[in-house]
Image (tube, rainbow, N blue to C red; front, side, top):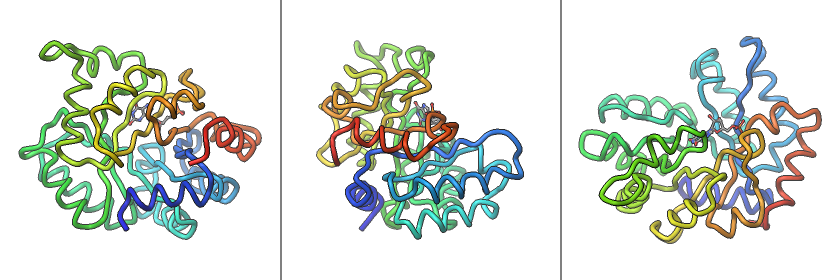
Length: 245
Ligand code: XMP
């Protein structure tokens, strides 16, 4: 099994379409401990986990090994949200370190192109059973200034969706706040390619029936869960607001 199958099977096992973004802020020395506590509380009720700079910068790879082990023990695929955007050799060095240290997938920017950019990363990930997820349309307001730029008579995100299909990416990121964009992207992707949608809760998007019907497979949720007084209840609410996986 590879990343995609692992994520889908974890989602079914835990009856959840939520990917938990472990975006802890505040004192750096307690972030990993707080993230471990949250995983203990909600780890059996989410489909996967996403980590980015919040944990990786203060702790480094060695500092988050324990967290990645908890994910592994719960069968939760761990996604590194590095939005990779460099030349191939640098991208490959980053993914080699991330994958060798327990990450199951990485998020990358298709803007960098395939040749000497992402092609070797995707080939290497496939060999290792790891995943590559491409940014197609981000969830912040400025996304339209970049991903929404017109290119050949259509928005750039359509070109990125085609790249995701052609490069056989495991999945794409499309904002939960843009149902028409999700629908357009879904029509371009191959069967089985996943759509992961951030922008839920704090950023104003909804994780509901409509977003799943538009084509989203998973909602990425950070602050709404991380900062909740009762995170498990919030996760349960998200799980019941979307159709079962
Ligand atoms: P919140 O707190 O807004 O966190 O639920 C969302 C998480 O997802 C990341 N994020 C994105 N990641 N494309 C991405 O790849 C996006 O459009 C996007 N929007 C938010 C964000 O960094 C946080 O970890």
